[in-house]
Image (cartoon, rainbow over all chains, first blue to last red; front, side, top):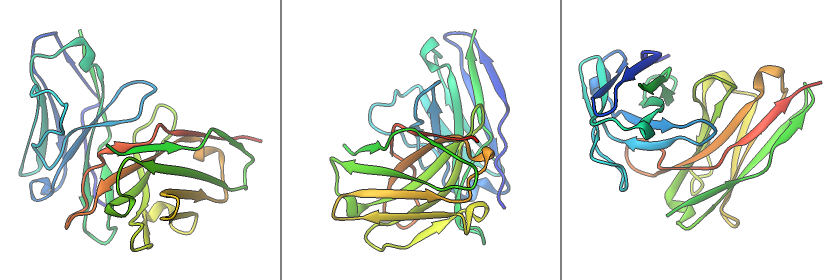
Length: 109
Length: 121
């Protein structure tokens, strides 16, 4: 089955840039979606189809995808960005299902 | 704006089954696919399966094949997830999530509030 690997944690100071990677075999050929989840809450979609933002999501959130790595970038990080972040793809191989990454905890110092 | 409202928390015995509902409003039920995602305490997100209500056919993650059944009732805009042969490891928050029906399965743009299922003797 398809595996998506994320770093367990990323720490960043307020106002700086956080980059969260999502590694997968030839992930650049897939559409990657990113979710933010705060404690006790349901996930929220922050980036879809590699780099598009749903309405209401700040421009500070951006995404890219190439080769074996997709990246979610959070610019000008704020305290409210502290959360868990998950990448997701649709795996069209024999499993035919959605796959989530292992998740990254972003801590704002 | 789609809203997904799930049924309440459940406590179940090992070996029993649980059925969680997810009622949609504010959108056209037939234009969405509904997926179920679970999250064990302190763990990540895990996709269990999904259904396109207008087609009525579901597909399931291999891990849950034979143990999960996902259905939808278009007349009430409600989707259901039933998990059988429960064990303690099934203790988790279960979410429903919707995605628009497009050529390639899309992102989950709306989520339910989650339903805590506790499996304990």
